[in-house]
Image (tube, rainbow, N blue to C red; front, side, top):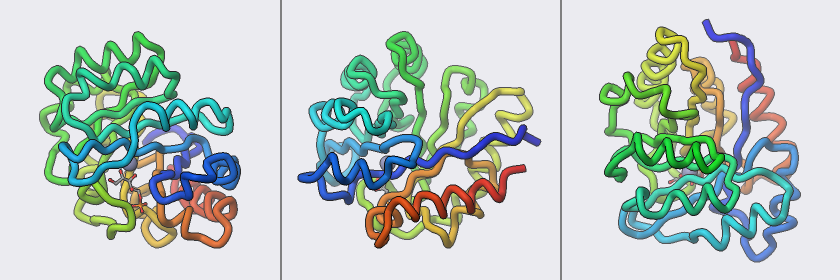
Amino acid sequence: MSAIKPVTISPSILNCDIANLTSELNKIRNADFAHVDVMDNHFVPNLTWGLPVVEAVIAQQILPVDAHLMIADPDRWAPAYAEAGSASVTFHAEAAHAPIRLARELRRLGAKAGLGLKPTTDIHDYVDLLTEFDMILVMTVEPGFGGQAFLESQLAKIRRVREAANSRQIDLAIQVDGGISQANITLAAEAGADVFVAGSAVFRAEDAYAEVETLRALANGCQH
Ligand code: DX5
Ligand code: ZN
């Protein structure tokens, strides 16, 4: 059993009104992080934004940035996101050439290091490397787009990651990202996730601030 620890809410700004970045970030000022999805149209079939937008979010000083890099060759590109001042930088296991070297570089630059796993990627190959990371991101949709349906099939993976961390006594954050809403956040929390990304659930809500509070309360209710 893990110790009782408040959960972390990291709304994705993927579907916010990016032309009004300041007011959109202010809507979610009660969150813990702003999750910024970087997509390069190579690793995923969609193109969003890169370092300048991450720098702009950081410069607002409203929320720390949780950068999610859905990009090919993160070995080449990820360190700049740490240098820019992202609180955490998550790159994908499927894309990294030397994940250990990269994670160490991100930490050396002052960021938390996150490892992302697509739905078909298991944790198995990484269980002995967990101390190299601060966070494992279990994708609960195929990465690339907001507004997709949560994949319940990923709950078993969340449990496996939590068990692997607990059995090695590693203090590891487990992030879930994709289709998270009031309907499923408790399932993910019960399985062992403690960092919750929600994009459309927050930014399509009438009151984003209230939605963050509701998601936080639901997830905290499941901590054991
Ligand atoms: C998907 C992104 C997510 C996602 C979140 O590739 O990593 O951050 O857009 O949006 P929702 O919550 O709408 O799935
Ligand atoms: Zn994301």
